[in-house]
Image (cartoon, rainbow over all chains, first blue to last red; front, side):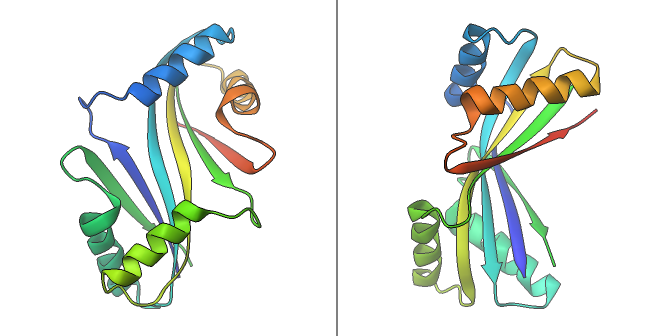
Length: 80
Length: 80
């Protein structure tokens, strides 16, 4: 089973990388670009076939390793 | 309008960051973790309200700045 994890900075947490992208897009001539936020996207291949167990496992992975839950949110999606 | 961009390494391109995550998950006791791939996830607020124009603009942003199209793929999703 494939799991897709999105890790994004919580709202209110400063995102200098996103600000740099917004600034660079402005310099390149793209108008009308407002806020830009950059996050991480992780795809994990799991041997687990039970959806509930897979979701629990990936949630534990996020809590323990993938996300810094002080400043980041994460969402878990399961594929086929 | 909000655009969500996923930037992932093309298949066949080595992903040392993903390998490091897979290895760390193994060390933490998570069994059954296969391939892990890490990509980027970017959310962009756009002033543009026309969906076609917004998609064209974001695609141009990816080609010019956000993605390294030699080694990376990108997908663009538009929100409301």
